[in-house]
Image 1 (cartoon, rainbow over the protein chains, first blue to last red):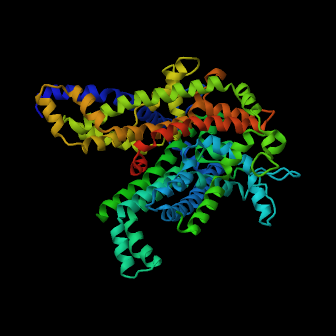
Image 2 (cartoon, rainbow over the protein chains, first blue to last red):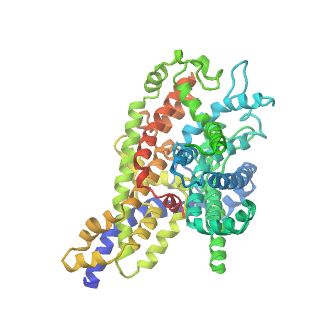
Image 3 (cartoon, each protein chain N blue to C red):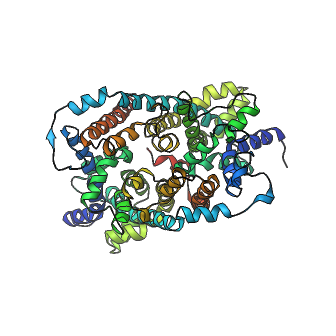
Length: 295
Length: 274
């Protein structure tokens, strides 16, 4: 376009400066800080006084059983949430994908939990999981006992607490993934499906040969975002169990948070942050490369 | 009218089961303490309905102040963020200048950083900048770090790129400056994208928990989610108050979403996370 290059340069930087300053100050700078702490011994009480310690923060973090537990918990959580939520939201999307606008209420119903704040839902579900005391019990135990199974102390049982939190998380997020799948189904187009139906393809065949291949981009997107989101687990266990029972629901973020404010050790927190970021970034980078290689 | 009753029946049953936690929350918020855990709807009869829980929750959690804090925080993030991010997005989409692609790559690189993991160094940075403690500093601390967002810059840039350039070129020939082009031509043309960003950020920051937990150390600076969590952890625990507070925190988002819904495009909802 027509303005002089020098002037254009000036305009560009006027528009960019606020964003770049804020991003450097509140994203890039904290990131570099965490990186530098990870190689130093530094206390939150006096962050100016640092002492270089090489890789020992990393060594300590990796061998810390509680950090390993937090990693195992978060990975297990992702392993439960990602496949179940993807499958469930896929089938819900197929079920609610009806052209008649009279069906819109059903999509709204499944989408509703997505817009409610997670702390609210974590508190609510703690009450739903309430164990039985006399005739008092949470809604989940009421359902379970009505179906003829024994009532459980869901959040107090080390084997059940993390699955219980996973169920809440799936319930909350399934509507979001459903929306993405619905958008994918819309792009798929009704003509192709109609043609297949006329050619005599049954529902199974249509799903396998037309819907699944056509939905591949949406499925990849849903799996990647759900995995990333589930690794950021924090609010649900922090509110519902504080990481208990027996540390079985401690998340990585809670562990880093406690390392800072309870142990007051910024070096260890920095090392934990860097390890966590690498474990998020490396799979993503590999995925990018694979996708680039495929196209 | 209903030609096939079977899908309707299954759908209705599934939706009721799916939404039963929220129905229970609503029922229990009007019920006396003794009914909440003894009846499946949270309330045993219509005769029990009272607003006692709401007035207790409002008083005990100091909700008036917490709502004010959260509204101010969210309004600040949305308002400032919209200006800052759309300006940067416009520059990346429409202006050619030296170093653009490198700077853009750096910004895109920041997209995958989840804010939660940087909370600790961010806290010390905020402290160095005096963005913690009393008003108004802590309000700036709640707002400023989340105004510029790499994801939003990326998303809005995509939408600016998809606009035809003819109108802008015509305006340029008519003597409009770059800023006029941005503010009166480009920005109004991407209104659906702007509403998507606003709604997603609204839901995200209304739910903010970890960051306010870290920096709102004084009671009068607490946001709504922290107020709810305190009601939940500080004895005596009153279940009805907690449910009433939950309903009160949910209603504003629900209303705004209902209002903004028709401006949203379903496929955009996911695009923000890409």
